[in-house]
Length: 484
Image 1 (spheres, rainbow, N blue to C red):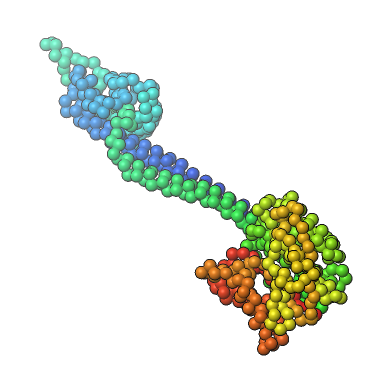
Image 2: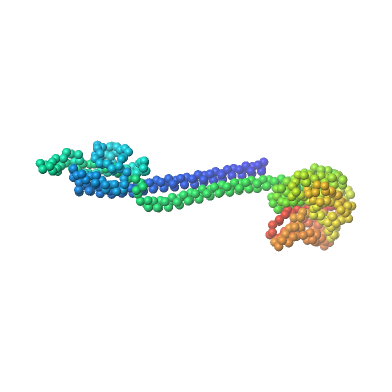
């Protein structure tokens, strides 16, 4: 339940992170779209203002020319309009307030402003313009009131000589000049600052979007790694739960153990449990490799050792060793094999029965200073044991046994102890381990120093002192048992 709660909390955290990443992507896309929209709006506004400014200058010059040089009946009105056409307008139209057209350049599609709009804006002296989309592009249409001398449209009176007489005095005619200039006629250099801002803003938005995308892909790997890490933590707890609870006292045996996997889960394993009433089984092994693959093989071996009646007789012990070997050969890859020393202690006969399947020979510390490996003792079967489990399907295994005396200490260990290396790649080695045990068992050392816990602490301390700050490269496992 606790682990399920941890995984659920992790999932909720991941959902929040994903929500923030999505929000970041939305913000980046919004900034990008807003930058483009602002550029289009501002650039259109600036161009429109420039075009209107050019049109206003042309219109002022046109009106001044009318006031100074044009009279009613003068045929130069089309010629004067050419000044308005210098910027190649799409159309120019001169009409009165009633809509009567007096002169036109180009073909306007339709009337751009109503009479009411023209009257209202002209009375308030407000500019009247708008942007339109024409078949040949965008343009700015603006209407100007132009005051022309005389009454435009009044009949022309001639004298007897056939010359036109001046028009009768009257109010100036208010004409409306409507001009449409294309936006492309403007000077595009005015957009340089806006173009620079657009590039900077778009680059920032794209950088943010790229960062969010990269973070999203990275977060997927991170989340997958965190889930695996959480699962490994659960596997570590499960594997730790399989280890025997200590201190363990059975059949007059005191135990001390040390288990330090190089990763979250390890390939080393040990076990200690009662057998045959008051007997005691002791198992320690090492699966090749580290991590999850090795831990899976450990689970298989642990279940096989616990479920079989291998401690009932020597023949049964040997058969179970062969069965476990075939099991690993059939169901594990050729790269996965295991070394294991499994033994059981018979307190009534004070004998230790064992099968060593290619494992580091456990060391037996006799009372005094003599340290011997089990394989070196004068056992009933000098050539006992067999190869590692999981490589040779037809391998055979032979049980051996040795006599124990009260106070004898058995030290079972994995190769992580003797192969622990310092910064100079020098290994701790079996010789240092033997020398340390001999020193612990010397006559001058107090009896408390021969307790299993003291021996375990001495070995672990010596290994740590030897390797210094160099991390362990392999799992380290110890099982120390004192009999009697």
